[in-house]
Amino acid sequence: MDFDLTHEQRQIYEYGDMVAKQFDRKYWMECADKHVFPQALYSKVAEDGFVGTMVPEEYGGSGQGMVEMHLFLEGLSNNGIPLLNLVVGAAMSLGFIAKYGSEAQKMRYLPDACGGKTRFCFAITEPDAGTNTIRTSTIAKKRGNRFAMSGQKTFITDADGADFALVVTRTTAHTEVQKKTDGFTLFVVDLKAKGVQKQYIPVSIPAPETQWQIFFDDVDLGPDDIVGEVDKGFGILFKSLNPERILVGSISCGLGRYALNRAVEYTKERRVFNNVPIGSYQGLQHPLASARTDVELASLMTLKAAWIFDQGREAGEFSNMAKLAAADAGIKAVDTALQCFGGNGFTKEYGIFDIYPLVRLLKTAPLNREMILNYIGEHVMGLPRSY
Image (tube, rainbow, N blue to C red; front, side, top):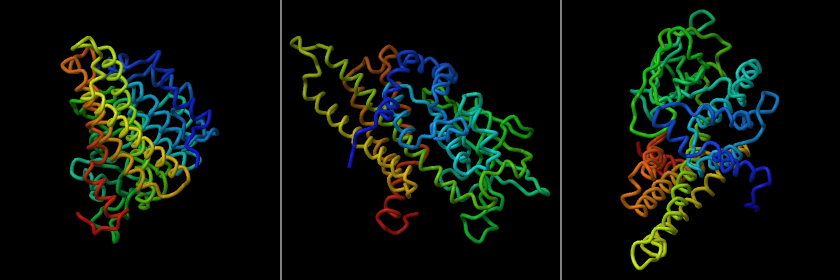
């Protein structure tokens, strides 16, 4: 068993250190405060081949896997510059189309998206369904050999800046199927199409990517817009959610590590009593050491989940555990760092508290902690279903 990264993987992981010299946390926060997408950073990342990490080379990507995507996103987050669009766009949408799309879809969508010319978002959550995807009510009704989509999605990250959405919908209502997982179909939807409207959702979280509701009113779609098979999208859909959980782990670990590194720098310099650094106090040092241990443990589980995914094996167990551990570790790390800074941690100048809302979000979204524990209890440990 070899835990060492290859030379290429190490370069991918350290890319964040390099790009942060040009696009640092201050740049990221300026975009977040203005609710402006960090286009310059995204264009640089695309130019350097990372948006297409999980897309084969023949479609404009770099032909890597989930391990490399994890290392890349954790490396960015180590520097306090996570890009949420890379989760919903590069991994969940582009990676999904690369794996399940038709040849025509791959040629049509992937090269421009990998090059940063177009962006994707992923639309699954609904106001009245939430975690219970089975109750999805957005429906694409058959009209001849075409479909008319109507419904609503909510909390869709980067919908305003995205050109296309990979939309989870039903083509048969859940009240009309024999098996509750039947009737799901995934469509690529042009967000400029007639019948598509978007509404901004203000949230109290500093992040450049904004949240939106999307409304579909008889949006015309054809067979060429379907990814996979009609009514049989559920199986491949839930395989796309494992990358989301893995990469949430990547971001959580990276932001936790970033906060701890900031705290270490601060406590090595800050002196209050007897002209000694406050970092020498065990009251600060021990919590920092404990938080760092939790981050590294979560990072290892996230790496394992990514590796299992790349092997083509069932990754649900490890993806859920990685998301659970990383979200908790990230919150603990930021909270511990904040305590070291005292009142300074809450100022804009030091910017430590600004990290907290995002890591706290990742405990609840995209799948809440309780549902993850339900999954582990039922599907990993064999306990009776609890809901």
